[in-house]
Length: 62
Image 1 (cartoon, rainbow, N blue to C red):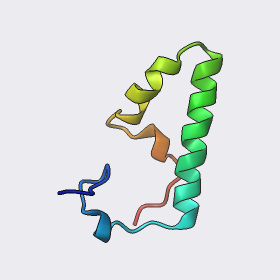
Image 2: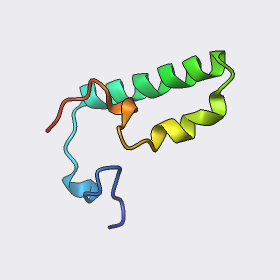
Image 3: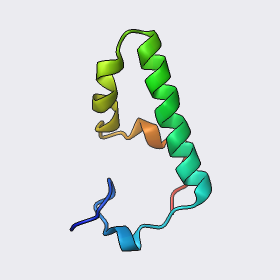
Image 4: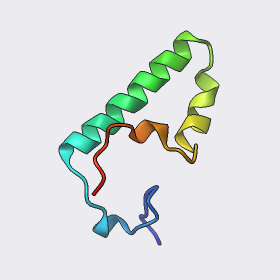
């Protein structure tokens, strides 16, 4: 399963739009800045790996 993302599907079968990519990037940037302002920047990796996937908020389901 080389090249699989967080969905567990092969990268060649992953469907997403530019809007989804931009939303994920914005969510990651916003979370990093918010955690840095709170002095919790080490917790970003934990947030990325959380089962509820909070960084995917606002991304459309395929």
